[in-house]
Length: 60
Image 1 (cartoon, rainbow, N blue to C red):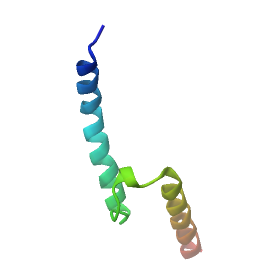
Image 2 (image 1 turned 60 degrees about the vertical axis):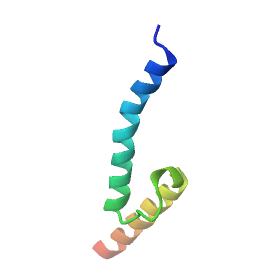
Image 3 (image 1 turned 90 degrees about the horizontal axis):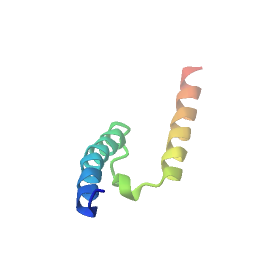
């Protein structure tokens, strides 16, 4: 059985790269005014849908 410390260390090795990726994606969309932890799934979905709508109207 793994200790809590071992589990926390393993979780941290996954969390750091994921957090960096989340920040990079927000920056790529120009949405880096807030951190990924401050941005809700609902807000991201709303922004993606709005962006999709903008792109749909400009491609017609």
